[in-house]
Length: 115
Length: 113
Image 1: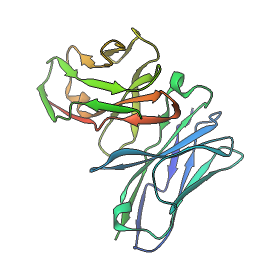
Image 2: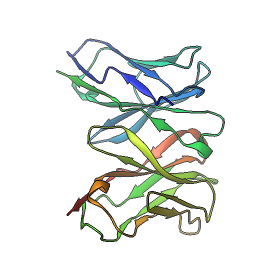
Image 3: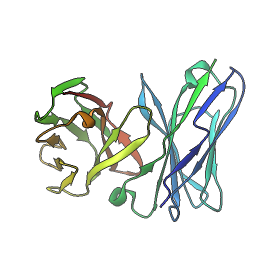
């Protein structure tokens, strides 16, 4: 079966712009999470959605937002980009019932570079 | 809150050597524990998991045992291969944050032929 698909794979943006990243979860998975990976901070949790509702949110400024659609696809948006937002953004999906039992399946990520 | 501490490495081994990557955690309750692996330029792949104390997760020759008494989940492999070269992340979910994975900082493993 198809895995978690993230688009685009690479993105270059200018400071002050905004960006939207997309994630299509594994078919049947209703939970989608987003993580930011940087060399300095490692893997940090952004937010998690289940059935279009945000269930959990990490400690990121309000410039980072997300949403989930009725087909479980998710988008995250970053407004007013800063150089420090350069990172690999990873999306992960799970059945959402008991994530501790199943773990999450990750996509290949979107590499965002802010110049 | 939850936290995961793992040896940061880098770890460099020769092919067929024994591998241990230490991981300890802090969490309330009974978290589920995971090891993920990341190959260059890719996302994370679930390597193995354990959901309760004394469970042993295993996959592709890798093993880890959930030790609640020592709050540890050390990763081991008896004979590493060059293809095992990657970054390994220990992670947990639960302990009051059931929908959020908490990761260690990752350990870079390089296996030389």
